[in-house]
Image (cartoon, rainbow, N blue to C red; front, side, top):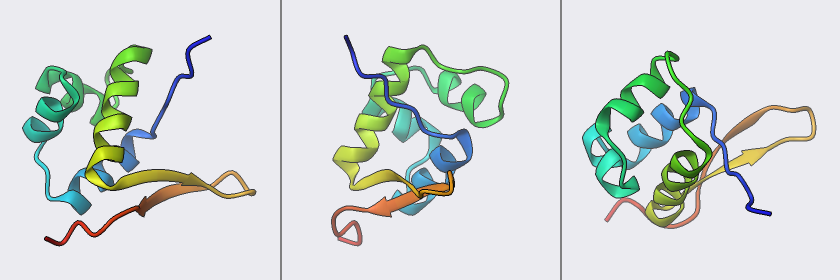
Length: 84
């Protein structure tokens, strides 16, 4: 069974901002079309599982991961120095 990654659309936008990435940059790093990122961020489309995995993996490589609290809240955390 393939593990499906997911990231709330608002956190995708926050993660991009933290990394200083445009929608185009995220799309390039994730190997998806920019329109996929645009539509997910504006809430008009949910990406396929493979596409979402690619987006989440691009963030992981870039130094950001999603975290979850016991109360159900989620956020992003820096996993490496991204200021360089």
